[in-house]
Amino acid sequence: MDVVSFDVALQQQAEGILAKCVACGACAEVCPMPAPAGLDTIDPQALTAGVLTLLRGDTHPEAARWAEVCSGSGHCIPACQHGVNPRLMLALARLARQSAAAPAQRRKTGFDRFGAMTKGVRVLSRLQLSPQTLSRFRSDDDADSVEHPEVVFYTGCNVMKTPHIALLALDIMDAMGIRYRVMGGPSACCGVLQFGAGDLTTSGRVAGRTIDRLAAAAPRALSWCPTCQIQLTEIAAPASGLDLSMTPFVRFLAERLDDLRPLLQHKVNRRVGLHEHPGNAGVPEAAQAILRAIPGLDFVDLQQPKVGYMCNKLSPLPAFKQDVHRQQLADAAAAGVDTLAGVYHACHRELCAHERDWPFAVVNFLELVGESMGLQRPDLFKRLKVMQDVDAILQEAAPTLAANGLDLEEARDVILRDLLGEQPLPLGRTA
Image (spheres, rainbow, N blue to C red):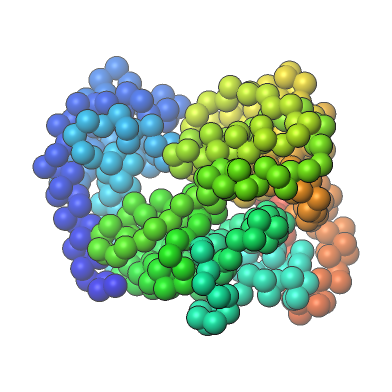
C-alpha cells in the first residue's frame, strides 16, 4: 500500500461524506450511545451536523464526545438513506481530532499502544500454552503448507490472551474437513491501534501488508475479531483500493450449519443465555442458530441491550459499562440459566471471573459447540483469573512459564495489568 495515498484516501472519504450527508439525524436517532454519554438527544440533526463540522476541521464539543463514545454498534449503517457509513464517519471524526497532536507524538502513542498489546498477547498466551500448541498459530506464508486452502483463519491479536477460543475454532474446522491456513498475531496487525493514535503512515503500511498476505493465502479470509473485521474491511481495504473477501468466523460456521449439524452428536443439557453484540451484522443471529442446533441445549433469549461490537468498545463510559455487565448478570440469574455464553474474546476476559459469584458458568459459545462434538479445550485464562492472586497464578503456571522461557517479573506485571487488572465490574454480587 502507498502510505501517502492511504492518508489522502481517508481525506477523500471524509470529503465524500461531507458531500453526501444531509445531517438528517437518522444515525444519531438510532445510536445507543448519546444518552449514556449525557448528550442532548432532542435534536439528532444538530448532533450529526456537528460531526460534519469536525470533518471540516472545526470544533464541536458535543459531536466530538459522540465520536469518542461510539461503540460501533452499527445500527446507524442501515438507518442512513444517503449512502453514508455513519460508523466510518465517526471514526474519521475521531481521526480529525488526532491531527492536533504532532506527528511524532502520534507515532509514539501508536508505538506504545502496540507494544503494550504485543507484550500482553505474548505473555498471556505463553502462560497458558506449551510451545508445541502455540506453534499451531504460527503464520505460514509457504504456499505448500496447505494444499488448496479454502480459507485463511485470521485470529487478529488479542484472542491469543484466551487461546482456548481460537484452538476450538481450529478443532471445529479440522472436524469439518475444512482446509485452512492460520494468520494473525502482532506480525499480521490490522493497524487499528496506530489508526486510533492518528499514525496513518504506520497504520496504512501494516494493514496493507496484512491485506496482501491474507489475499495471497486463500480465496476467503475468516476473521475472529470484530475490531479487525471493521478496521480492515470498512477502513483499510476501501481506502487503499485493495480487494479483501473477509467474513466473520461465526457467520461462516452458520453458513456451514448443515455440515456442522451431523457432528453435534452429544447432548448438551444446559439452559443457555447469550451475551451478544450487534456490531458485526449477522453474528448474533448466527451464534443463536448454532446454539439452537446443539441437541439438548435450551436457549434463552435474555433480551439484552444491543450495544457495541465488543465489551471493550464501552470503555469510554466505564459507569455505563458496569451497568450493562451488572444487568446482564442479574438478568441471566433471573432467567435461571446455568450457562452464560459469550461470542468474543474481550467480553470473555471481562466477564469470565464473575462465574465465581453467580449461579451459572461463563463460557465462550464455541465451548458448547465443542462439547457437543466431543472436543475440549480447557479455559485456562478463566481458571487463572478466578484465583485473584498473582502469586498463586504464577505457581499454577510455572511449568508453561519455564517451557516458554518467560521472565517471572515480566509475567507478574502482565498478570496484574492484563489479567487481574482488566475487571470493569468488580467481582462480588454486591459490586
